[in-house]
Image (cartoon, rainbow, N blue to C red):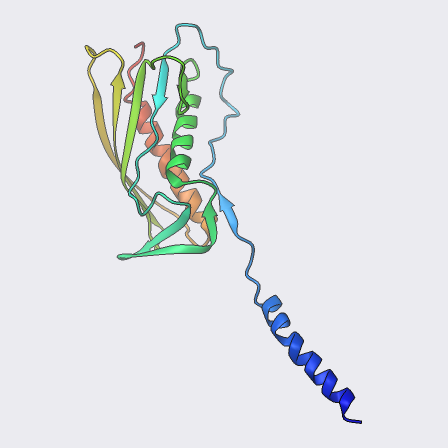
Length: 198
């Protein structure tokens, strides 16, 4: 007579771990990109056979940043998001966004981060030494860059910038938006140093 209740109790105990696991399932991992700026006001590009070609080298980042981890800084501590990641390595995302911003600003020139069939008119190399967003919502970007013309007789341009922005950091989307804004500002500064008509 006691077999049935005992079997019921055993069945409940056997299912308990499964119910616990189901109840503790973490939310799905979210993937983010730095995205591209709106191009609704950009005119249709018309590249002539003599259009300048500008090659964008892959952006250099510190090793601890160049991963798919979305991180914030708390003092000396690096906090990695457990539920969100970049869709690609951060250096690739920064390079893509930089290239898109410059392409939108210079529609008559071929600007690319992809391999070219011929030698580019000039090459741009960006080195980011600091790219932090802290838990107080302050984003900092320190970068140097060089514009290297194909013609060795033309001057080489070297510049650097220190950019700061503030914003919300309550979610990975907020962190991504703050970082996106800093990269767009960097691209705008780089754009002002690219000589015309080379």
